[in-house]
Image 1: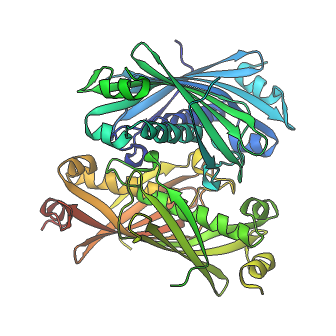
Image 2: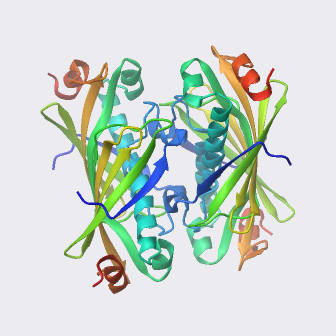
Image 3: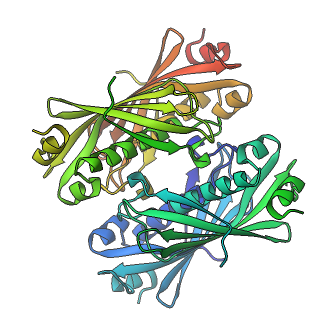
Amino acid sequence: MEYIFEYEFEVRDYECDVQGIVNNANYQHYMEHARHRYIQTIGLDFMELTNAGVILVVAKAELQYKQPLKSNDKFVCRLNVKKEGIRYVFYEDIYRLSDNKLCTQGKFDIVSVINGRLKTSEIVDKALFGE
Amino acid sequence: MEYIFEYEFEVRDYECDVQGIVNNANYQHYMEHARHRYIQTIGLDFMELTNAGVILVVAKAELQYKQPLKSNDKFVCRLNVKKEGIRYVFYEDIYRLSDNKLCTQGKFDIVSVINGRLKTSEIVDKALFGE
Amino acid sequence: MEYIFEYEFEVRDYECDVQGIVNNANYQHYMEHARHRYIQTIGLDFMELTNAGVILVVAKAELQYKQPLKSNDKFVCRLNVKKEGIRYVFYEDIYRLSDNKLCTQGKFDIVSVINGRLKTSEIVDKALFGE
Amino acid sequence: MEYIFEYEFEVRDYECDVQGIVNNANYQHYMEHARHRYIQTIGLDFMELTNAGVILVVAKAELQYKQPLKSNDKFVCRLNVKKEGIRYVFYEDIYRLSDNKLCTQGKFDIVSVINGRLKTSEIVDKALFGE
């Protein structure tokens, strides 16, 4: 898969649970942060959009956990985004930097809610896809 | 869908993010806790299994977010579990108690790792399915 | 110490870290939730206050960790509140239910920020202390 | 105060709550991560110590919240550590990078528990203080 953006992270110990690996829910946090950093590179800001009434929400999340991340691991989240109907679908893959191992694959269907209604945002469309 | 177990929760404000709704990652936390409470009713305990070297991990997570949960919402997580190959697949649905609205649907493929190898656990099989 | 309110909780496995005990930061979450539940009993709601521009923030937090909480522990947070100058000081103690052991003691100085300025709130004063 | 180590962070949106600022509990997470990164520079590793039975726990935490951190803020945590009896006391201050504003001051009393008993660790003493 082709990636258009990547962001580096390192595991923090508090993100690991009793099994000594990053808790499954935290990968959604990593991937969310990568999305937020990405949209900033194309002129959007999550907080500004939220304050302007363009609420970007996750409609669907799919994560495949192939290799667990552990304390001290440094990793990178690489992503791409496609439009599918009214959904902005983000494909986000996490690779461990030490051996470039693919650890986690995520797919997030994002929709924008404007004035309480499901509706694509021209601002977001334009920034993401130049439409 | 038929459910075999349910567990009640209430939203805590710190689980909500700047959008004023429960952050998408936290639903994985709710659903994980419901799974752990469920297996206790059939004689299993997550910590004990972990300490005995039977590491139950999430191989895949799929969540559909239909209605957001907010501050003060009370909700119930209802679940069922099927075996698919070596995977224990948990179907977990979150309903808001005030109006019984289906808010979130989750599907989690759980696998057991024993001595570092992907392998079904007899203890878990027996408890979950009477095999 | 005399308590005016108490709220029960149970530990969730994802709140525990690699040491197998609840991560120190999570106690602040428990105690925050207890505060929010408490103020509801006296006619206040954290979200409503926030939306009305009365922002209650923690100015200072002190926690003494005496006994760690573990997976499966059920516990209760008992609290009292005093006014000290413009600060609402919450004293919150966590007791493990199984043996009533005092596990954690917290002291939180809460202040209200209205229109960006540190200022006591009449609504809050009245509800908390009948002033 | 003199600092012996510093570590940079940036705020992640999911760390912010409904008030639009980083939730008070998350500062403990930042400061914990800074401590863990610090001890690595002097030859210690939190996970290794844990696995070797030297359990470092927080006995007391005091945080003063002076300025809230918001979405997009980059900040640095600067720290120093003193020995007070059997306690390793970490002083950790968070400064916002944009204007070098002191946002949060933390003081953490860390103790080591070895074989279930409160006991200073020679390994830790030596690494921290050269004793």
